[in-house]
Length: 594
Ligand code: NDP
Image (cartoon, rainbow, N blue to C red; front, side, top):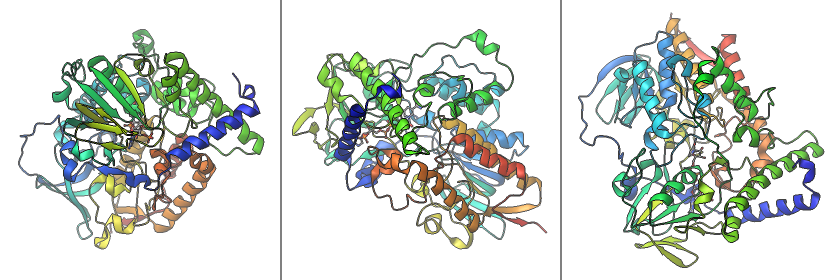
């Protein structure tokens, strides 16, 4: 089917259906519909994987760099710093090991939806060959541990440690970092590498606290309840009724595993995901061995170009992502004709994904309910070969909530449309905070120059240069999506950010630069650039069904500043690279030692 095959009548019908489905899902509480895993839900945030009896003596020391976060962002920043001969660094994480996302997300079926050869960083440096085109979570977690060992990061890590406060001391030109294990670190530079999907959230469903069965969030999977483990089948659900709330990328991977293991599975759906074919397969060792030096950087860039409308000459990855995202249909289009052409292409892609549902799911009513009615950039497209077929099993029941969400949770189960579904186990596949203020997600509030807290200076949202430096917070380098890049292959963004931050820090340490921060003028200029880029996709985003991409279409008071760079990640990378090669620190205020 080409875009011309989509006639005007079909186009109008699809537009009307998109609007109708979006309208059903709009709600006045936006982001406030969710609740945090604290207070009465604090137990749901407990680390089920770490040793609860772990203890160590407090550490008190001066160091060049403290990096908060031991996921890929923190690890890559450390590796790049070491390569710049900055070896005096400390990595802190509340988790019990390296891995970040891949430490926490151990739910059955968890895997990376981006090709392993472009997602897993440092493959040329480590010599590691991923076993499959799409790697499973246990393999990625093990790879994180390998990086930790190979680059000597374990000796520099403080795990199971939470930041209490980070306070800039202008007199000594250092960050004073204190932790819940009574550590006191005095660091010349502080790097926040907290990830984007690190703070799990719960749906704010009435009665959720009353459930008397076992309940947990997917990112804190409770194998005591389900039996099995990330690499072994679950063996305690054979007589149990399991409910799962949410049908995003996580649920798409977990549901097929639950379907195999549980007596019954009820999948509570508010909005269906778009699910394309996966076609995973083992790595061809001969092909991998024949890759020429520099192949990974080229492949990573090629993939990002292919999924952001840059139309590279060759599509090296050639998978579901590059097929679905080949045309960047969310840009405004230079002319009305071009805008309509892009809209048709988008409908065409989504229509093919809807047709796939009808082909795979045998019961027509269930198939209808599983069809996604929104544009392809509204939610992360999923790729999975077993999710849709799971609904053909007699023990799997789709409970669609007609866009309204679960009505109530009772001590015995979940209520939708007045019907109670009794459950033994309730799993929340309800996602993570993404567009809230950075300090909310960090879990602490940096104190900059003159005692100003970040939440005070950023009371109306973020103020940064490139998302990395901020005025009044000297020698603070941030790696987060706030005012920075974003991409289908998030590792591309993290790798480039890590290189950027390591360059800034090592250059300052190697020269007479005592402190670096953004100037307020440069922050405003950057913000205007972000707004201009966001303007190109504003209408598309507004027309979307609610989700975390658009802050649930709610009124996010700081949303005007807490933007991401919405152009191609390739362009963002070019901006920060040329800023470095220019060597002038444009837009930064430097304090040089005299
Ligand atoms: P999401 O935020 O994508 O999904 C949350 C789900 O919970 C949605 O289906 C949402 O419905 C549903 N929900 C929320 N509140 C209610 C309610 N009151 N009643 C019923 N349903 C409700 O979280 P995920 O954890 O699935 O995915 C988050 C992100 O993590 C992904 O987008 C992706 O970026 C990443 N991820 C990546 C993977 C990878 O392979 N790289 C794998 C898994 C996740 P609604 O859609 O209506 O809001």
